[in-house]
Amino acid sequence: MEKEKKLVEAITPMDEDFAKWYTDVVLKAELCDYSNLKGFIIYRPYGYAIWENIQKFMDARFKETGHENVCMPLLIPESLLQKEKDHVAGFAPEVAWVTQGGSEPLTERLCVRPTSEVLFCEHWAKIVQSYKDLPLLYNQWNSVVRWEKTTRPFLRGAEFLWQEGHTIHATKEDAMAETIQMLEVYVETCEELLAIPVIKGRKTEKERFAGAEATYTIESLMHDGKALQCGTSHYFGDGFARVFDIQYADKEGKLQYVHQTSWGLSTRIIGALVMVHGDDSGLVLPPRMAPTQVVIIPIATHKEGVVEKATELKNRLNKVARVKLDVSDKMPGWKFSEYEMKGIPLRIEIGPKDIEKNQVVLVRRDNREKTVISMDELEAKVPEMLEAIQKDLYDKAQKLQTAKTTSAQSMEELRDILDKQAGFVKGMWCGDRACEDKVKEVAAASSRCLPFDQEKVGETCICCGKPTETLVIWGRAY
RNA sequence: CGGGGCGUGGCUCAGCUUGGUAGAGCACCUGGCUUGGGACCAGGGGGUCGCAGGUUCAAAUCCUGCCGCUCCGACCA
Image (tube, rainbow, N blue to C red):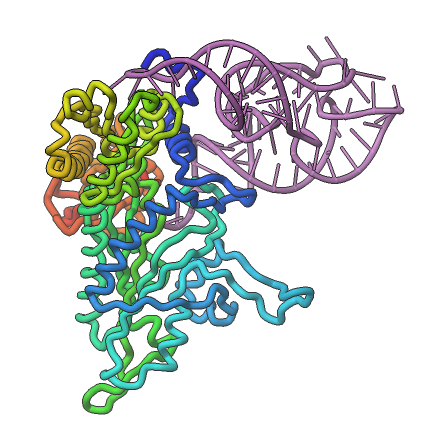
């Protein structure tokens, strides 16, 4: 370890500079690269493969729950965007505009979609007639543009990849059930696939989506104690339906407005993945979503039989895992570091000594634990160990979250806690926007959510001292 | 959008103060040798010095503007 001096393009240690560490990891693990336009990143093959695995998992669940994929236009006429005033007010500051087509100025500006609510609304108004047409359960995989001032790879880009689900329902109850159902799909994606424990809750009025009646969120905690919103699901009521006149005839033939939802999860989750599981050697990927789960490193490739044996192992393992064999003439130590940087969950070393003893060496990425097993038990042990890593990563993240979750009785206490150690802080809140603003001002913390699992950590609002029953999770967020 | 730092082969940087033939290490290519935590030897290729103007006989170096990255604040997925 110590001789990784100047020869090695080292990653900045987390404790030294977390932000630098993050940037080093995403670049050196080859997840992305900067383009020559601020805020627009290049998703490199490895980074995109991660996104594809997340897509695959979620898309299957969207289909299982009855959703259909569609594709809406990239550009939105200004007049259309401006129909819903809360919505446009929320997005206006970060919209990119197209003002010219070819060499001719346009008569109306076109907005590059920051999200597609209005496009869906306009379309639905045309096609919905009867209660028999409902519900419509749509999703689209695309990218959106929001002209952000401060950008960071994955965490905040001017353009980012995501999915946006949009649905309309006959009743309020159906729409609300959909909102929660899709939030649960996000929970499953984070916890089952990505091994990221999350807290489910509702956003305060201040934090909710522009134009929504209610926004639900899942929040996770990064290694530096900052919170990150992993996905949101919105209930719109019939607000947009009234503006866009989306009506259907019910069984009695009476016209009714539809009830609407939307929900999104973006490539920002890749940032979460990096910051939840990564360490000073680089990325650490949960096996279930890792593009490559096992890398085989042959030792002394020039010796007879080594490459052949390694290839044989790869062919056998192909049936139970996603495997890569590296026969390049790089030094073994170089390969170890390289694949650790890329977070590949399990490494297999196979050299002349192992072949002699009919064994292989397995090394876990998450804890570097070495295990020597007989070659005969390869197909049995490898998937077992991958699942163990998956579980351990989740448990470790859960432990960190628990350790960094505290509670406060006052704004001052909240501030002192966060100044000392960032994390989730539970604190009671009266429900008043003014108090939320004050907390932001005094403690530099935002309300992450009103968790579904409510509890009483105090009797009174941490700001104004009024008696209250409502618990908020506070934190400093990305 | 305000404040700081930075921009020179693919990467990390030196050179800039005091203008005068573009450098090093790593990476890359060829050959040899080596392989259980980022080897070694020999030979080789590669740079409009972020972009655009200006000053000058002469600009990586001085001046102006712009672009980008990054960190810290305000705004947001």
